[in-house]
Image 1 (tube, rainbow, N blue to C red):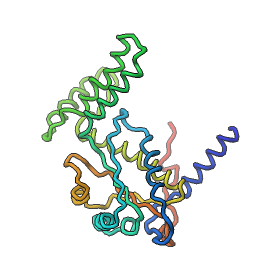
Image 2: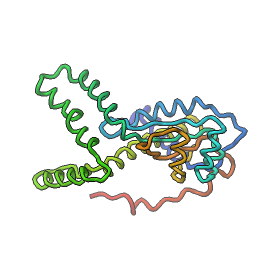
Image 3: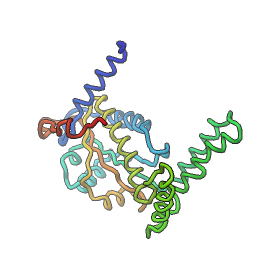
Image 4: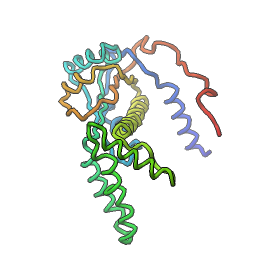
Amino acid sequence: MNYQEDQLTKAFEQLVQERRSVRVYDQEEPFDHDAVQRSLEKAVLSPNSSNMQLWEFYRIKDNTLKDKIGQYCMRQKAATTARELVVVVVRPDLWKKRQQANVTQMEKVTAHLDAKARKRAMSYYTSLIPKLYGKNDKLGISSFVKRIIASWIGWKKPMVREVGRSDVRVTVHKSAALASMTFMYAMKAEGYDTCPMEGFDSKRVKKVLGLPSAAEICMIIGCGKGAEGGVYSERFRIDNEEVIFTK
């Protein structure tokens, strides 16, 4: 390991160790709202399924709106004392728009390939993605059919089994969660604290933000400079031996 790699390792170790879910924020400390923007711009560089980027991030800076959403977060102090809130939203309904963006990009990066190789590369977005994200009816019939097809193919060769509507929902939330973690590490690198929250009235938050019915809130993140007592206890984790396995 060279000097630069050693410094990066130490810096990341410090971020991981110092990042905590801070539930009370200092109201007197100066807060750089631009740090939130910079951190979100890093968050969108996070890995995500098929590069579909079916996420949105809503910055809540207005005090009146922030107070209202704080109430919808069950009055958690991590929300009511936050200097800014970030609402992480997934948008599976935008799959066609994101698909087309990827198709346009793929046309550029495959331009040097022969026709056969280009068609094979493009088929991922022109054929597979519509089958996965499209035709997911509310009754779940299409999901059932897709699972049957996946199981049938899986008899003969390895096959992805998570192809139904609920599976796609899990996929987009996982991608948004990856971006959320990147955001929280970036905020820590900026010198600020965060707290991801799942306890909120999603229906009311969606309404106040004017989100469509197909949108879902992944989490709401409180941001600020931690106040004294903002970390409620020492960090507790199950022993590594109980969760890390080598085969």
